Image (cartoon, rainbow, N blue to C red):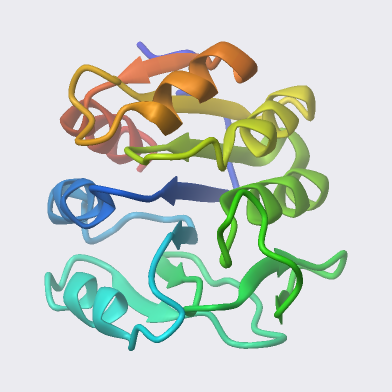
Length: 192
């Protein structure tokens, strides 16, 4: 049994960068179609990118995947992708806000921005996951999730296409679990 498997979580946040398309595909294609929580994703991408990531992940027909909209309240069983060139934040009322603030760790959207605001809203009822990536974004946010009592998971750096994000998160956040992509999907499915 995984630490925290028996707890009643309310949301999952995932951060990824270089290699993230493959990592997210691996998780989403293994995710059960009855997955009961909202999944909120920040994937570093070009400011000029279109909605390809949401469309691609939605084509797997597991759970509904869409870009997050301003003032939208996350719904169970739906995955939300931060739009290109916008930070995605959780407000105190549980809705999304999209901002064009300064880049954080050279990124907009930033994993840290989402994770820190989600930690404040969801507290111990949040699962934070850091996947492959080539910078330090997400480490401080994952640490904040842990400080608020949430469950923290980092992709095994030995499996990551780019191991900087997972290794930095391991050092800074001391996560509850270090798992392969398949193990992450299995853990999420165990919450059903």
